[in-house]
Length: 192
Image (cartoon, rainbow, N blue to C red; front, side, top):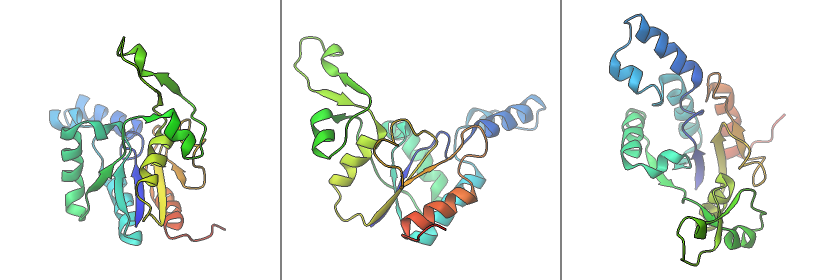
């Protein structure tokens, strides 16, 4: 199985898109619904994601914080439906430090949840996205290749560098250049 670990904010939407819609909204050329849903995936990024899926047969695993909201997951699947794909799974929310170390990584951002649940014994955890991806991969040994599409690197780079395609929230997010890099990673094609 091939897997795309998909972030949403900064990958499927961008600041440029928000500014563009805001300007249209101020001119009366954009509906309230379009403006309020500026953060939903837009045509260019959906086409880039579609190219990756169609060229590789990869499944989408949601690694974005959107994975925590069932309404967001439903809305994303509605956006993906016309393209013929959907969210296959989602990563967990936080990983114990013991598991991170067992998987061979050093956690970057740690917290002790006993601070949040006073009086209850608790193990230290991390919310590093790289750790959440590592745990998901350890539970799915049938993964032959994967790519991480994310605009952030701080909590991914210490875990995965070769499999990460960084997008740009402040520009065009997931574009065709990023899609081509992702396809090469998933299809294990050596880069020039």
